[in-house]
Image (cartoon, rainbow, N blue to C red; front, side, top):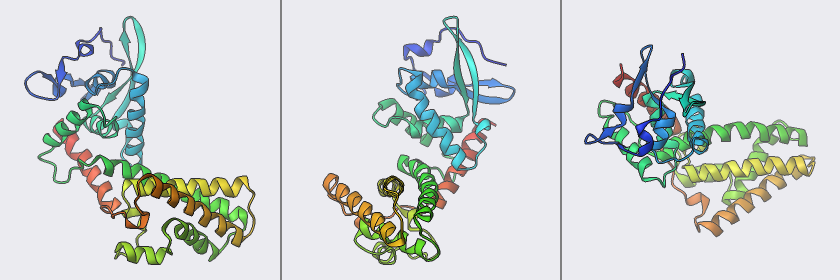
Length: 283
């Protein structure tokens, strides 16, 4: 059953992420045993003025939930509320959903930083708690990279790449971007796990650069109707070189010198532990 609410005092910015004034926990509602927060009220807490803009943070949070194989409906429930006599779309957000939204919200907003600190402070009972925004973003980008690797391999197959040629094609892209082969790059970065993808240990910015490399290589293969193993490798290397050049011009940092981050598998496990711990707070 949809919730009906009158104009809320929360639109007057009188709530806080503290114990001295009306705070986050005071906003909690319960419907059939589901403790939740209204997305429209929560958006004001985070300093957003329009629901349309706030939906971007919600959508990213939902994508993160999906990537972690956590049931979205247990944390994000669509509903409608009455605002000034008009039915408006809303979400019932679990505590974990509120956490994910805060981690995916605009980092320039002071209220977002306060929310992130609030969740860290309320997570003392959680053994593994993710408070690094970049780690949360890495999970989403890594998933996108996996998806676009498959799409690129499909485009390469159409171009005539097959068998062992896929490894050579992949290596060409890394060679262009990093000025070294993948095996040399793994050694240069000090990755010891021989059976793990280097992508699982890349930081957010390096992952994003590789995502751009993959999408642009795929686009180039398709638009130019490239055919043949050698031509496909040449495209992969050329695109990699252009991404490298852009990175050097913008940040001055060589991609091969970017530090490795925590194993993405550990980050995913920690986020699942965060989900379990935060929702246990509400019984």
